[in-house]
Image 1 (cartoon, rainbow, N blue to C red):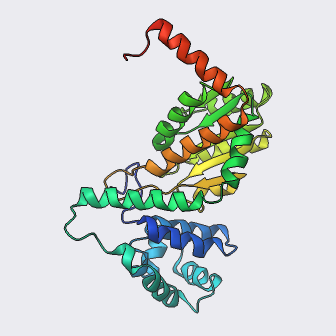
Image 2 (cartoon, helix red, strand yellow):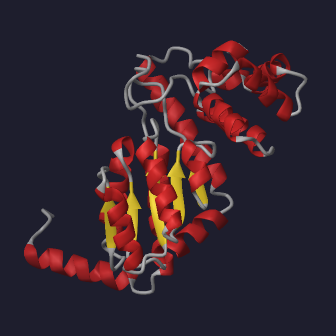
Image 3 (cartoon, rainbow, N blue to C red):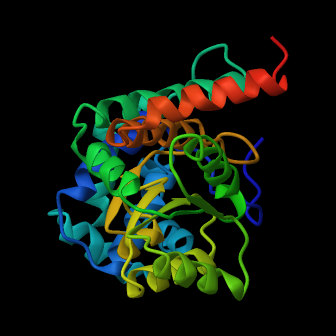
Length: 290
């Protein structure tokens, strides 16, 4: 089943391995905001990218056809046809469906590829370590995630509250969102963690811009380094979503959130003591069935 264009999911067909190769190609160049939008579109449609015409890419990205041509030239190609030939040369194996696999199995296989790409990215632990230090040092720590990203934000906040003294979940939009960000900043917050997944609500972009104006350092977990939130993030950690089903799957962003929790715990000297205290209290109250 392909993705519904109007739902919370993104466009269908992205393969983890192909998306990783596209990211490496695009990240090696300085791109304009319009070109980043095209790059984000191609990463999201990594499985289809080698076969899309420049007109189709323009329609999907919401830009003009000449913008797609200029994008290809900015990457060092003579034009879009040369870029498409290159994509066909570097990504044919990842676009081929697994023989004998049904659509559900293919979705799982694509998600496994996303996790493999995340593992490769984490070979350099520097960005996650920096993020962990920023999050641990922010008291309170606001955690933002709206719509599709709400589950990731709630999951992170639930576990983070066991080791961090003051975690504030921001999973509802509206006019009070800016007020809650301001309140966190006044209370001493120095950083904000955001989970941003497609489709990206405009409200999240506005909230991140407001957070930075309030003096907060924005750490973002997003589906791509070219996601719309990138321009409003101080440290962006990408983790691809699976797009083979009607609604996106977010195994890699969820796992990256847990990795961030581990990094944050490493920076909190009393994290282990807090966990032990929670376990003792939970046992005394009979919270869990053993």
